[in-house]
Image 1 (tube, helix red, strand yellow):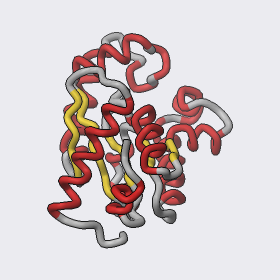
Image 2 (cartoon, one colour; image 1 turned 90 degrees about the horizontal axis):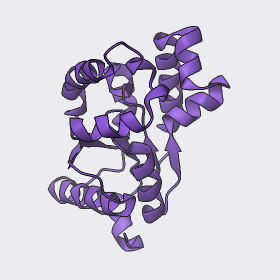
Image 3 (spheres, helix red, strand yellow; image 1 turned 180 degrees about the vertical axis):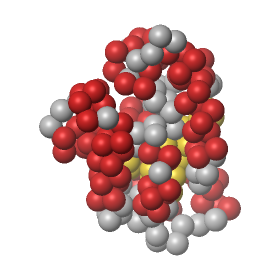
Image 4 (cartoon, one colour; image 1 turned 120 degrees about the horizontal axis):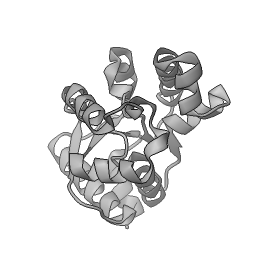
Length: 189
């Protein structure tokens, strides 16, 4: 458990979790926010609230471009606040404009192993519009290759190779954040 005085090392900086779908951003984000005693937001959930329908419906009825625009709008709003933990959608890193918002905080890449992501996705196959193809595993590989250079721009990288509890992952992420803060303290972005 992260102690309140430890959490203050972040000052007012928001933590943005980035990474592939099914890397654990939402689950871990909620746990990390609870331990840091900060509000938690999930950009995908907020996009669904704004649109009044599911992400799958947005993709089906209005297309990916519309979804990405809503995602950018949500991120722009969140970037105006401090002391948050934000789980982002997997493709949020693709738009340069989004990086201008992500740079308002500390970006943490949850670099989950491809096998782990695939195992998680097989448990919930119908909820990922970008994988609705004849070969979803190949689509996933393509997305991972396309996005990895963008994820690599994160302030902190946390490799995840196996299943762990949210509290264990939160501790792992916190240790990686602390290492980054020791190397380069935040400047109240």
